[in-house]
Length: 449
Ligand code: PHE
Image 1 (tube, rainbow, N blue to C red):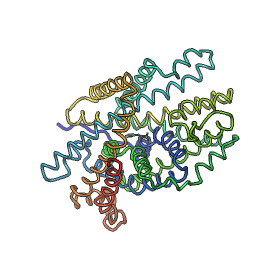
Image 2 (spheres, helix red, strand yellow):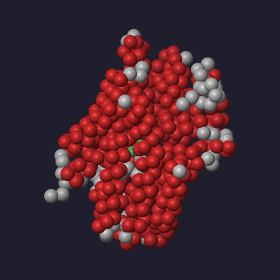
Image 3 (cartoon, helix red, strand yellow):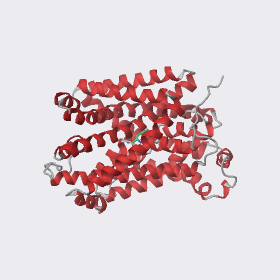
Image 4 (spheres, rainbow, N blue to C red):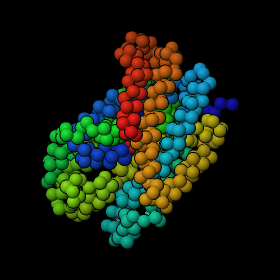
């Protein structure tokens, strides 16, 4: 008996959910801080190039495979090729995606917990509960554990509701709130003294840094992470997309929203750093470089908020809530990957699948908390720097080489009778077949060798 599958109720619901998955800590925190330390606009340009030249085609591959098969990544990739060998490799790739999505969630949950902690600490402090507020923001095992568990519980609660009542409903509520908060915060910060210096750093490129292979890999990794690629998230969201929606155009909108919000976040974070500088908060290390990414968010910005009295409390709460919302709309998409697999492949009820997958990930997360110094950085590097681009490469190979051309065309023709005359059909199939795997391969090989 086939399990009844969820489906996004509206085009807009899908757009918010997919953009919600894409827009996360990667955009609002990762991208601006990386841009700040890597030549400002030079990084911005590299990132934009990576996003449109490499990440968008891979996004399309995931969305189209998902929509075509209406299956999770494991079943989807194993159903595309004709030969048994490639079917098996497809299933393995899907499992790799599922494991990587879970690994990402296991560190993402910890960092998102910190965001919740910071968001709660400002109102608590203002209400006179400064001991509690300090506990929430100070690094410690019990605090890291508790906040991670709270965040994981929120994630599981949304995923438990299913595609329409959980993921779509919450994305539709949270995404507009996120965009409004981000724009308001940026506009406010831009009026403060020092902001213009930040703008200059952001917008005037330092091309000395642009072509190092390290930077290319960083920008590629960021673009893949930011668009949630390689791990089956976009594939599973695509699989919940109605056959009436034109995938190439909605994919482009998701990519534009994602990149747009990252760029917008740059207009908040970089000026805020230099406003902090103007107010005497240290933003450079002894070597004259910028402080590392985590210090920027968890000490420079709080330092800045402290110089602002009541406005600071409001601003800080809004900022960390913004981060928490961005994180939640992403974490639900990560959890949906193993959950959908368990439901479809192992015929579990959604409740059981959510508890099992969420519980396992939270347990692994706890292990990371307990062995923070050894595991935290290692899990991030493994999952985002290597695993994600590698899986993205494999997805391209499946879309480009192992998916029959007529089946692909039939998929595109569902919403466009003239699909074979479009630019997309002329360019994209060749592009994912040759260009994407080669470029991703070169960048990956360079970083390994
Ligand atoms: N795109 C999310 C972000 O930018 C992270 C993410 C990665 C989400 C992989 C889902 C899958 O923060």
